[in-house]
Length: 146
Image (tube, rainbow, N blue to C red; front, side, top):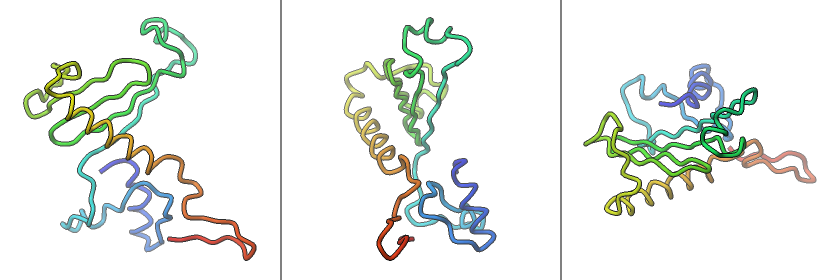
């Protein structure tokens, strides 16, 4: 589960329709002991590590303020970390649960790392700004598909 699941869970519990724009899913089925259809097999998160008051991060890493971000995709086997302007990190969590051995530069892992980068990009594309997802303003008024 992820923090994006909180709102859909509360709305489901209150028997209120969950807006299509919500990225998460209700956790009520999991609480009842069932796994919902198409339940995700990995977690994603983004982190903005810039410090607006102190430029020490940009100075230390030699990157621009707007490049102090990262995205992560993690499942039970691998973790891929993509930075805006730094080299990636890639960990085999089965063999290295403490994430001490970065495999991003190992050519044997290149196809797997590419697969995770593509999964991350697809997730980002599907879950990017969704405020107006499935909503259209027509001559007849607002049309929404749930």
